[in-house]
Image (cartoon, rainbow, N blue to C red):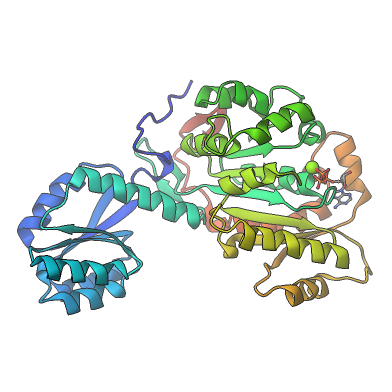
Length: 429
Ligand SMILES: Nc1ncnc2c1ncn2[C@@H]1O[C@H](COP(=O)(O)OP(=O)(O)OP(=O)(O)O)[C@@H](O)[C@H]1O
Ligand SMILES: [Mg+2]
């Protein structure tokens, strides 16, 4: 069996060595920093700069992080001016100044959004690398465009995890249909993918041809990487955790606080640590959806193409973008709409539907896929198979959503012929 990355400081194992660093300062300082940082596999020092002009010129290398000794600047103004224009996360070490000067310079630097750490004279490098690592994880979680980096063990691994909550407040609109088929497509594209159901009793395993057990209650009984593995069933390369067997176990889950080890949030965090590139959550119209939202960085709202659905989807969007703002990490640009069960000649087409919604609220997310109403979809599900495996028109209609979330430039690096197992599933590198 595969041994998981046990390094506790590497929360996202896929991020371990992806952060690139530019270090700027007097040569002696650079040498010391380089010696320490190059020993840490989470970072790669790619650029050095010894004066401000050099630093500005080398920004074109697009580092993730800049660590700068401010003594290379002539004074506070050129330092502030340069740092304001930098997009990377900045950590700055100030020279010894008077208490008042230090205080006012700190205040000015704190106003620069990308300045993430300010130190005086020296910096504890061990503490700094933990801080930089946490900042990189947060940035990548908030910008989940997928990609791959070479892995130390050979082959490639994901730089980020796309955690997609598929949700709407309305029942029966196609959330389970979209989440099951979308996750299957992600797995087919080579992304290590986990689908999590939260229904009660959950019809997700049923329509996928899987069993009622194991399911999420196995995770709840043992909320550890081992417990996660025990909760999984497989459909080809896709890993699936079915939802609750009954409403009682669902009710118990709803009572659990967000930081409970058995919570949905911790399930997703554990799955991220285990190296999944894509996690799709089939979020129910119950209050458990808030748990799914808290764990996600992407939201797909599934809706029917009717006026009533437009109104209710606007309300669902308001709930996430306004009322739950601050309780999740879903940026507005990572919210998408799928219109399901479109009928030819229907009075509401996608443009007019979006127009109706946009009249209610500014910045309403785009409709990225329109799925036709097809008898064969229900028939295939009744046969316990996925429509994406059988129904061409359905697969074609879902493709724009898959392309948006799992872009083709996110394909793994060329295969080395090596294989790794994620919970027993072979992943080729
Ligand atoms: N594009 C489609 N064409 C025809 N039938 C569809 C389509 N999408 C979904 N259905 C059918 O609609 C029903 C509801 O779909 P689904 O279970 O995916 O909705 P849901 O939003 O998950 O429902 P719930 O709120 O109960 O969890 C199912 O019987 C499914 O077969
Ligand atoms: Mg459902």
